[in-house]
Each structure stands twice: as C-alpha cells, then as structure tokens.
Image (cartoon, rainbow, N blue to C red; front, side, top):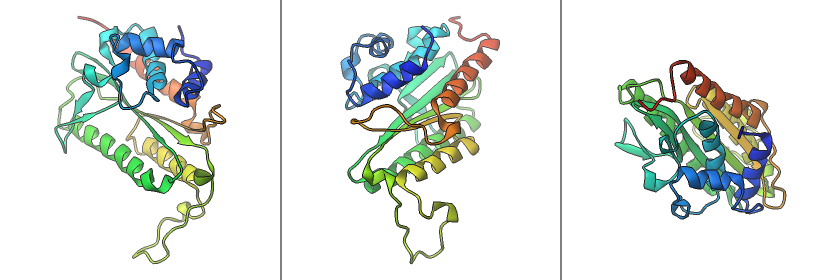
Length: 244
C-alpha cells in the first residue's frame, strides 16, 4: 500500500491520458470520493494525482471520510479575505486541517496567457488561508499546505521569455533570460522559502513524453513525499488520526 516512485510516475502518465483510468490510483481516488468519481472537478486530468495524495493518508490510517477529493464532498476552506476557497484535496479531522493541496498545471500553446494567473492563484490561496489561521479560524493544529504543479514540456515553455524594457522600475535580475519553466521553478522555490506552502512538487512533462522531469531538486517528488510523510508523522505523535 505504501506510496512509491512508480505511483508518482503512473499519476503523471495518467494525467496525460497515457495510462488506464482503472489503475490503483484511480480506484483509491474513487474510494475516498465515495463512489462519485464522475463528478470530479472539470476534466479528470488530476484524478490520478488526487488518488496519489490520498494514498499517503489512507496508508497512515486516516478514515476515508476524512479525505476529500471532490466538490460533492465539500472542498471549501475558510479564508480571511473571502468567506471560503475551494481546494483540490482536503484532509481534516475534528478541528484540525491535516493538509490541503492545490493541484495545478500550465500548458500550451500560449503559456503567457495563464502564467500570471497561476502565480496569482497560488499566492492568493496560501496568503488567504494563512491569515485565516492567524485569525483563529483553524483552532486545531497549524494548517499544512501542499502544491503540486505540472508544466507542459513544450517549445513555448522551454525558451527565454522577453521582459518589458520600458517598465517604471526594473525587475530582479534573476528573471532575465528565463523560460516559463525556469520562472515557475523560481516561483515554487520561493513559495516554500516564504513558508506559504509547506511542500511543493514541480514537474515538467508532456503527452508525448510523460515521464516526469524534476528541474529543481528541492521541489522534486522525493522532497514532496518526505514533506507529506513528515506532516503525517508529526500529527501521529499527537494522536492523529483518531476518530473520537
């Protein structure tokens, strides 16, 4: 039952439709989704990744009804700057948000159209929830946040992106000569450095070559999985999961 590297690679392959939807990760996702697999978020690309993440908590003994992967189950969490925000995977017990995950992707052909949106979404979701926690809207243990991102490996994401030369003030030099793949690596690393997300997995992949590449070592699958297991272990020392 343990989550493996092969599970991770299978999840990415299934994201691109390159693997059967009847594999173990889909079955796990369907199980924790109370048999409502067809009602998942628009499109089903991330079903396998949701199943991958659910598997960590199932193997640690968390009851199925504590793991939410579908809109129908209620994925909304309280915010500070808005009443609620819907996450993609939510694990909760009693008054503690065990973990919440954002599952996002960026694909072509026009990467520039959605790049800023993805950055703003990730920042807004984390800042909103972190401030809600400070406002005591999460009375249990401190919330833990994870971010899983797939960048399509394509010509449009590989080459350098121009920077406006007539801006009022110049951007940080680190951004010069970077591709969208580079930029998202910098962004995701800073999400962790600034403690906005506790663990991030950033991979590049494509339908023609689904095997995931991990361009930033500290954002690779091994680090992400270690972060999730660390959260489970930490709460385990405090008596979680429990069904009292």
